[in-house]
Amino acid sequence: MKILVINSGSSSIKYQLFDMTAALVLASGLIERIGEPQALHRHIDRQGGVEETERKHAIATHRDGLLEIGKVLRESGTIHDLSELSAIGHRVVHGGEYFREPTLIDNEVVGRIREMIPLAPLHNPANLMGIEVALQAAPDIPQVAVFDTAFHQSIPQHAWRYALPEKLYSEQHVRRYGFHGTSHHYVAKQAAQQLGKPLSSLNLITLHLGNGASAAAISQGRSVDTSMGMTPLEGLIMGTRCGDIDPAIHFYLGREAGLSNEEVETLLNKESGLKGICGSNDMREVHRLADAGDERARLALEMYCYRIRKYIGAYYAVLGHLDAVVFTGGIGENDARTRAQSCAGMTALGIDIDSEKNSHRGEGAFAINSDASAVSILVIPTDEELEIALQTVACIEEES
Ligand code: AMP
Image (cartoon, rainbow, N blue to C red; front, side, top):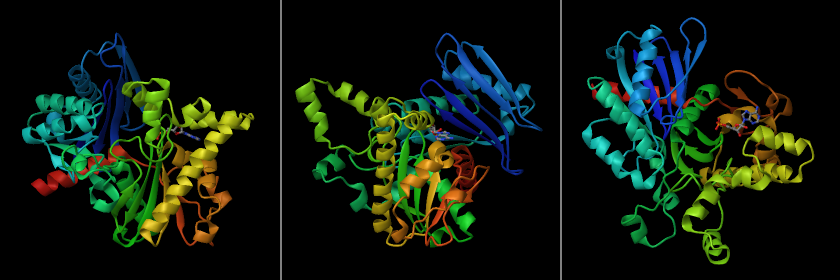
């Protein structure tokens, strides 16, 4: 059973082709700079070894990009014809309140995803472009939309409502939606496997720490709170996003610094977070600067980990009982110092890292808690593409 997963961005298309029967990735790739004079297409063929090829030429539109992906897959012999695909799974960032689970795409679904554009003006149009081109290229193959927001639709109202006038919710759809749901769900399932217990019996705090970052409180397999809000700006400190701040800062900047709404939006999304504090949004560079004595980089690390600690404490209280804290994402998976500092001082809460286990580097999931720690602390590599493929299979099997 072959499943193609497509993650279509504003000027890029990421893809992975899975053989779900053999549990293998057959090929993967990324096209960047669509619409620019020279696009870059990196393709990795994984049939019997890893063979990487790079093509640089103009790719004017997403349609051209997807046609090229089909051509490369055929030329490398990975598939002979698109009709060999059992389904195509598409990442869609915002499903609003309407989409609570992966959904087989038809014209009505396309229309609903289009209706969500005001909630995700940068992402949903790009996701839709991928869907529309794929529907044209392969009209007979089932296509499934997998939403970043869907996993968090189980959050109770007292956690997703903002303390704002009711009509902002009922008329303008202002509420917490949460993001990174595919990743939080995937690592929660992996954590259950790692702990040898059913997910429905576990309470978890999952920390997706990448360039974007979010925390989720997961009770018996269901998300009950998450740190990102109506947009991905709220919550943890991120590479370039500020996370939680006093909303009145926005008005102050307008009044006192003369900044427009658009300027404040750019400032908070693209020039804040680690980058705003110390000049770099790359955690490896932040460590390098801090190790060289840069005080701003040290402060950035302290602030970053302090914010995570606050969320762990808050979500521990939300859950009442905690079985495991899970670290994932580029920083969560690779940065032992961030993990240690984020869990520091929590021994009395039963959260205790073993520094030797924490310094382990290797493939796959591993535990980093001490033997005395009541709470398991796990490092689990996320795999959003695989989760989209798994959910795509579940969706088409349910429909048939
Ligand atoms: P992601 O968005 O999940 O790809 O994560 C990107 C972030 O992970 C960047 O801030 C990287 O600096 C960070 N990262 C990747 N590898 C490491 C590492 N070995 N140590 C610390 N941070 C890392």
